Image (tube, rainbow, N blue to C red; front, side, top):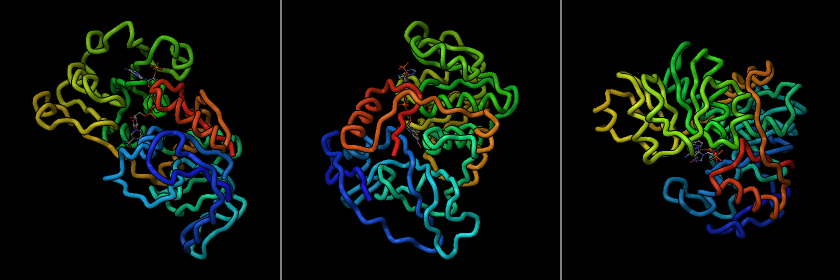
Length: 310
Ligand SMILES: NC(=O)c1ccc[n+]([C@@H]2O[C@H](COP(=O)([O-])OP(=O)(O)OC[C@H]3O[C@@H](n4cnc5c(N)ncnc54)[C@H](OP(=O)(O)O)[C@@H]3O)[C@@H](O)[C@H]2O)c1
């Protein structure tokens, strides 16, 4: 199969095309004939070697951890999926990622893809959508009427988080720059804050939940808008315990733990039109395509999701 791999850590030039054997299928796994994948910032963080102490990989490494396609082979113990099923997944964090024509995925990580959802839209969802879900639902226990601030509502995680929070009946504020205002507002937030014009910490107060996608001062300033007993959940930087205690806030860091059954919940929302993917950038599965895609992600100013058609 064709794959885009890295053979050592480094810059975008390390992304090279290779022919590799598809890994051997275990009993509880399926092989997906890949139709699309998407880019997440972790891809270039791994490529640069920033994650090598947390996630040690042997080379070559196929980056990418979002899959959408059609099952072409099933292991002997697979129960709920068959050859020909349209599926999507956030595969396990191994060196056999998704910038490839074929990907092997464990059954518990898979979800069926509704017929009305194109593969590109599906491939955008798993990593970013599940992260948003686990932050808001599992960690922050979001409830109807909660006031929620989503930082970077124009990013991969943020634009799904807005839609998930609205589906729970929350009041949602979000930050992004003015160039993204029109399309972000179509996702349904109640308040849009252009972070280049206004400081969120000066205009918001009494919030129940903040989803921190940026860290640093933005995380520290987020305590100022939370009510006593509020929740701060970060995906970039573990909050400091003493800071959280001082503000009487439940604060924590979420690192995505992929689960097929939660992805199936997102699939139901997608089928009903309650969760849509905004794809701001599209590339193909080639060295040049992936290098350009990483460049967009590394800018920190991607619009929605970056998708790779296969
Ligand atoms: N812990 C986990 O499991 C996990 C999972 C997923 C992601 N992450 C991490 O979470 C972070 C966000 O991921 P992502 O995929 O959502 O990133 P992304 O798609 O690359 O985010 C880009 C967006 O951030 C916005 N942005 C940049 N600076 C901003 C600011 N100061 N205020 C508000 N918005 C700003 C940009 O909007 P403008 O162009 O308008 O500035 C852009 O649309 C990354 O660091 C990623 O590695 C962690």
